[in-house]
Image (cartoon, rainbow over all chains, first blue to last red; front, side, top):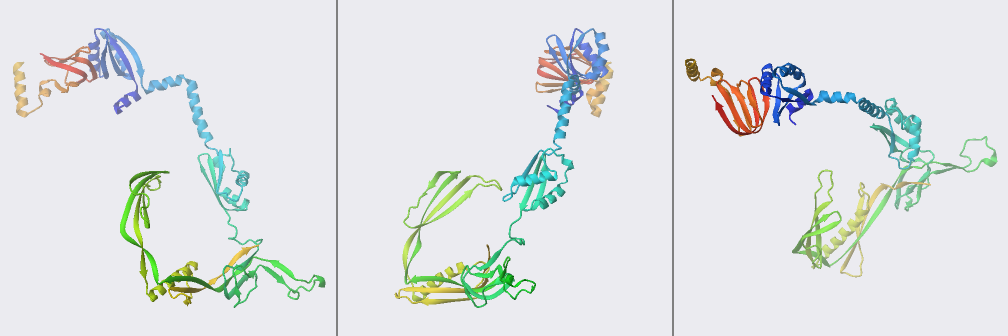
Amino acid sequence: MSIINLWYYINGYILISIQGKGTERLINLAINRGIFLRDIRRYKKKALMKVDSEEFKRLRPLVRKTRCKVRIEEKVGLPFFIYRLTIRKGFIAGFVFFILALYTLSSFVWFVEIDGTEKIDPREVKEATRELGLHPGVFKDSLDLEDISKDLVLKVPDISWAGIEISGTRAKVQIIEKIKGTEYDPEFKSHIVAEKDGIILEIFVVEGQAVVSEGDTVSAGDTLISGLISFEEGEVEDNDEPLEDREKREMHVRARGTVEARVWYEGHGHSTLLIEKLVPTGNYETGSFLRIGEREIFLWGVLENPYEFSKKDLVKRTFDWRNILVPVEIVSLRFTELTAKKEKLTPEEALERAKQQALKEAKEQIPSGVSPEEEYYEILETKDDQVYKVRYVMETIEDIGIEQGY
Amino acid sequence: MNFKKKFQGVLAETFELPKEILLDLPRVTIIGNQHLYVQNHRGIVEYTDKIIRISVSGGELIVKGDKLIIRNVFSEEIFIEGVIDRLNYEI
């Protein structure tokens, strides 16, 4: 539909038919008067044309003059459409009602959703929001979301942050729960125990009672700082107590403090003079297959290991596009043949190899972020002079205290 | 009358003025056999879906064809659409 046709439609036009001998004269007269006639066609004996509804009135006297029969066939256009609509009052009333109802009903909250609850019962949160004024049927504008979210944090004990968002008629309540242990909870009782074996270098007690002293050797699991503090007679300055009640008194606290100790990490390694290594021969086979979801479709080459010893390399080519993960990928395999090759080492080389193995084992045990204070290794005696054994030790100073509740 | 016309013709040619304005001639533009514009006409003489006769200065323009419709009529211009067969001048 072209723009100009749209314009005609909006203005409104009448489809008329002219019959009679004076048809052409009528058209000429209309042209002279400036009445705009469009789409003039012949249909059997009549001439049909479209004329503007306003200009049609001016056509009337001309019709009489030329003695033609003019008939209105159809009234097309927006003004006529609206008129027809106004006659059907029920329709208009229904339409207006619909618009009003839509607007009104969408000004209320109809759904309340709770998100983020893992330990807390969501129904508890829902009940709390209901008491604070957020419930289905409440008028949207009457809610102060900031106030409600702040009150919610105060109201429900395990919530650390609450946020409320209203989208459409749905209220989404997002909560973040409190993580136990990150704040001071006076009810929580614990000891500080040793995480590893070591020799105590320094104890620093913040709360609790130390049960070991500097220089002690401890094993993993030993209590270092106790949360159970006991008082003995004479230590309390309360002299109003009767004699029988003056006994050992106890207090439960949450033990806190750091315990620095010297920790050893040990690694062992061995090596023979004659070792077997797997060396690539230079031969390789490749293959490729297409994976769609769960199904694998063979494309070309070798998919199974053809050699006795080989190394398998796998390269995946996926078709993910930004965030969209596509479950289609092309997997390319490469099998590199290896053979066992015997290599002879010198005694020094064998020793070094054993040492490196031991070092690696020891190093793996050390937690990240800690560097060894001292390192040394020991060559162990072996009955076989073909075999070399090394023990590698790394020493660190760490805080071996770890909290254990009871 | 003829003299006047001849004089006007010479004038038009010398100064290269558009002839149809000076001599009151119609300008006919035909696109394929589908559209026909006539500018500077004097009215419609006959209109059926097979013949349209347009009055112009000096005579008549006869358009013969099939399914002929008049898309627009203005006081100076007429726009015909349809399957145009032949165009005749009757002076």
